[in-house]
Image 1: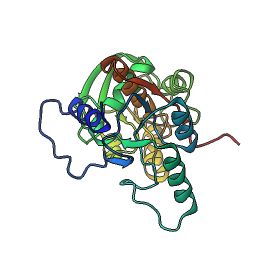
Image 2: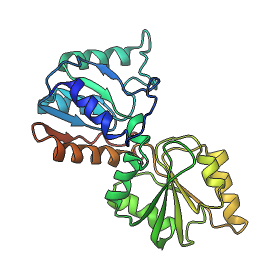
Image 3: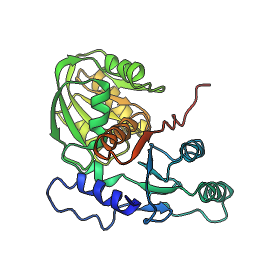
Length: 264
């Protein structure tokens, strides 16, 4: 199977039987040849230098990532930048092809990235489509407090920097899954159909203060800021597991990139 053939197959996974316009998608090959034969496919969240080296040492021909490799949504290279140049040299030395798989999984009726987070977190409930792209809603079978939900992210998915704004200890069932940094997070937080918004990154003076004010005024409202990587990486872990089941002719392995932040 070539890189191109694998890309086309994974594109089809996300079509849901309906036509989509992907002409402006960022889901393109960032380096390497689409005609490369793939025997080992590595999957990760970010193509950090450590992940690139580990995937190459394992013998991968392709590295599938969710987020940009070169600090720009469309991976436009920074000119005269030593970090960009060093990373390009590393990729050239390894011979890895790098493909970003971002827009397609988010556009599924059940967002594939959110599906992975919910699955490995062990939540039970009912899915529904949110009002914005890359946003789903999830009605829990059993009520939980935002604090206990945050602790589950910490203990089960090893999220190291979870923050809670708002009513941390009121039992809730209506979640809005705004993993990563999608549009419409503030609208979801304001909705009277949502108790808790889970997101990767947030504008503190806007979302954080809204959630705090709402709680102090007696509303059942909370915001969980998980960090971008912990809010989405288990969606890529799910992709690796699905590929391992589907493509028996390939070896597929998930590589953990770790979080961007460290504790002081």
